Length: 171
Length: 105
Image (tube, rainbow over all chains, first blue to last red; front, top):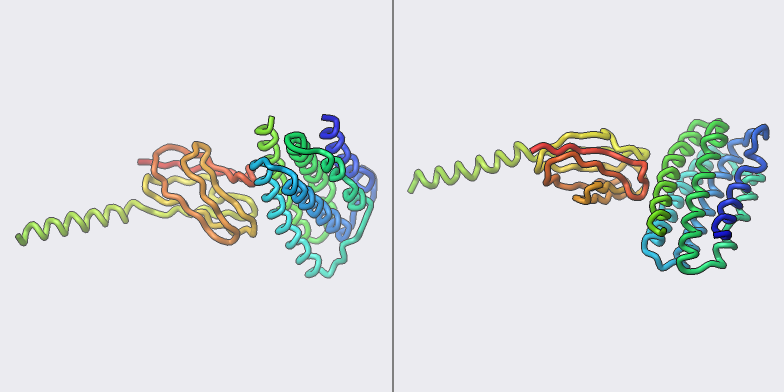
């Protein structure tokens, strides 16, 4: 229980601070691209960890979906930054993201891992969706980047609901 | 002998005609995670076809369990509607994608 809570909380803390805090300078398009891409990569890594550790079919199917969708979205993101000739820029938010929950989940196994992974997926998508809605989409200047983020938001809202269903089934 | 052949041929062809007159294909487009139109009407025997414009894998699962259609990226998937009634469906990968089909006799 503690591990599950702390994993979720760690992600939330990292994403909300400090670059996304109210009053902070608006992220630039290259920073936004980097944040969005990094968030996707981390979810792919979490899913790969789940595929290596979990034996639960529903959890594995969910992880497969995450790898597939986030790989596709990031492929589109990379194509767009190339087209726009933008160099994704490292920043506090994306750096913070990279230090998150994987290490804590690595210590868990079996049903405890499944529950913690799925709970973390719910919390993670909720946080990323909140950041997209409140900061990243309104801050994006380029129309194509904004549009990709808006489609991404719909996809990730779907993932959040999917994760919530899986979480309810695990109880 | 001849009249029988004629009547048989007539029954056969009219049967074909009645099937082709009723069995329509109703298209629903999937674009940026939205089913359009979100609500469609059909008749028993019609086919519902989902045309996926996204690069993502989707599906359409009837909440009553009658059918699930896989909709690969940039492809389409279809199901024959065999029962009357109003059926809600959703994408299991992205449950925020929802639609409804009302099937009349």
